[in-house]
Amino acid sequence: MAVYTKVSAEEIGQFLTRFDVGTLVSAKGIAEGVENSNYLLETTLGKYILTLYEKRVDPADLPFFIALLDHLSERGCLVPPMIADRDGQKIHSLCGRSACLITFLPGVSVSSPTAAQAQATGQALGTMHDALTNFDQERQNSMDHDGWRTLAEQCGPEQLDRIAPGLAKSVAQELDQLDEHWPHDLARSAIHADLFPDNVLMLDDRVTGLIDFYFSCTDIRAYDLAVTHAAWCFSEDGTEFYDDISHALIAGYESTFPLSDAERDALPLLARGAALRFLLTRAYDWINTPADAMVTRKDPQAFLHRLRHYQTHPDIFTS
Image (cartoon, rainbow, N blue to C red):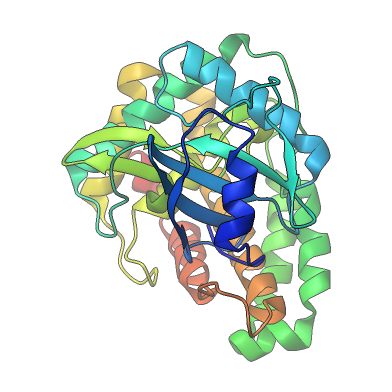
C-alpha cells in the first residue's frame, strides 16, 4: 500500500456519503507498498480502507478482483471484500482515479514471522487454493514468466548494473535458464501472486486476513506457494535463509491442500522465477519511483540474494 494521490478529508467525507458507513472521523495515508494510494478511514460506524488505483492496476481488472474476493468471502476465507454503495456499486471515481471502499480486517502484519505464523499462513493459502478450485473467472498474470524479459529490457542494463555490478548479466542468464526449463503442464488456478508478510494480517499465531489481491491472476497454482516461500523464508535483506520457516510454511500448506509430486519437483524452479520476478519489479520501481511519492522503495538486491540461494540450494524443498 502507498499514497500517490492526495485526497483531502473533505473529499473523503463527501465520497462516504454514498455509503451506509457513517461519517468521517479521521483519515490516514498508508505508506507501505508501491502500487496504489491507500487510506485508513475511521467513521462513526467503524474502520474502512479507501483505495485509489494507480499505475499498475487497470480499472478493467477491478471486476475480476471483486468477483474473486466475493467468491472467497462467501466460502469463509478471511479476505476483505469491497463494499457496495446504496446503489449496489463497488467501483467509483475519486480524484481522477478508480476507487473502492474496502472492508477493514483486524490484525497486524509481522516483520519477523515465526514458524507457527508461517504454518498458519501456509494453511490459509492452501485453504484459499481449495476454495478457488471452482472459481471460473480468469485474468492474465501481468507479471508472468513471459513478461520478465520485457521488464528487464525496460529497466535497461546500465540501470541494473548501477543497482549491483554485473546484475544485468545475471538477470539475462537466469532468463535464459527459466525460458528453457519453465514448466507448462502444472495445475493452474486463480492465485494471490503477492502473499508477502505485509499482505497477511495476524493476531498472535492466527491469520485474521489475506489482503492486497491486486496482482491476483490465473497462473500455475504452485507458483503462488513459491512466491510466498520467497517472501517469508528469508531475512528482509535476503542474506539469511530460515529453514524452520520453510518447513512450517510448506507443511501448513499441505495440511489443507497437498502438493502433487510434479508440483513439489517444480518448486525449486518456480521459486527461482518468483525471486527473479520481484528482483525485476523492485528494480523497475527503484529506477522509476517519483522522488516526492509517499512510498517506501524496496531494495532489489534482497531478491538477488534469494535468487542465488535458490540457484545453489535446490534441495531445500525436499531436505
